[in-house]
Amino acid sequence: MRKAVGLGDLFVILVAVIWASSFTVIKSAYNEFLPLAFASVRFIAATGGMLLLLALLRRPLRVARGDLLRAAVVGAFHVGFYQIFFSTGLRHTTATNSILIINASPVLTAVMVWLTRAEPISWRQGAGIALAMLGTLTLTQAGGAVAGGHLKGDALTFLAAVSYAVTPVLVLPLLRRYATITVMAIGMLFGTVLLTVVALPELLRQSWAVSPGAWAQLAYAAFGAGTLGYLLWYEGISRIGPTRVAAYSYLIPVIGVALAVAVLSEAFTLAHALGAVVILAGVTLARWPARAREEGKGFPTRRIESAEALKGGG
Image 1 (cartoon, one colour):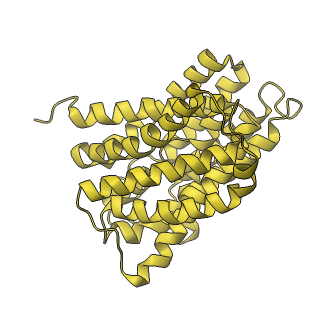
Image 2 (cartoon, helix red, strand yellow):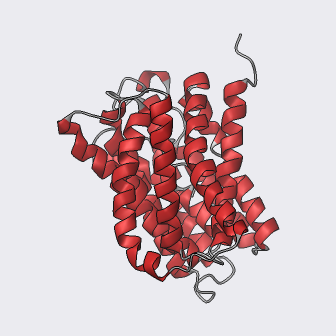
């Protein structure tokens, strides 16, 4: 019989903690770093770590010429647009709001899958989408978010969630033909180039005389939440399967919000709690496993769940 909790479970739980804490770490780093400058240097380092990992595992860094454009587009959304919107959004909102809005992205993926006619939306998914959107609206109004200046950040963070939601739909054909780490490494290369081009003005304005603590935060975000996080997450998928891994992803918003409130002293009102509960309820419904008789229709549920794991932390 399978162990109740094995090494794969421990890997995924560790990554959930790392990714959850990354929101607070990145928000704190903005005291000394400009957002896009931080994101650009972070992903240059993370991409280097990913390429080193690829070499150590002796995996090829190539796909067929016909798939190269799709891999580039995956990287543009998964790293480029996602980080541009996420980084600038986090600058203008709280880590709490950012965590909860980003973690509503699976319901947006369900919408994308439906719009591309890849898979019909069940009544549960439809209800989940509606609940998640309602929760997001509740969250943006929590504690007077409009008056507090968080609306801009919340809107940008929502665009980051949309950017991620496109990724699973685009990446599925590649995951059928290539190793995940190969697809990720190529995507990160293209996405980091786009991110760095957009970040160039901030890179030129950034003062690099920052404290050792700020450099440590950047290293944690690059190699902890980046290279190491993805390695352990996908090792967990290979050991215990994407369905079980998806269940652990619900730890990320819970741990992340708790850390943001404790470390950054962010407000967490009854309205925040209500928005969080409604969002998580919506995500739960949207990601509810398909019944056995439905598994033969549309894209395989396990493949979609595996592709959704590409998101990671901040």
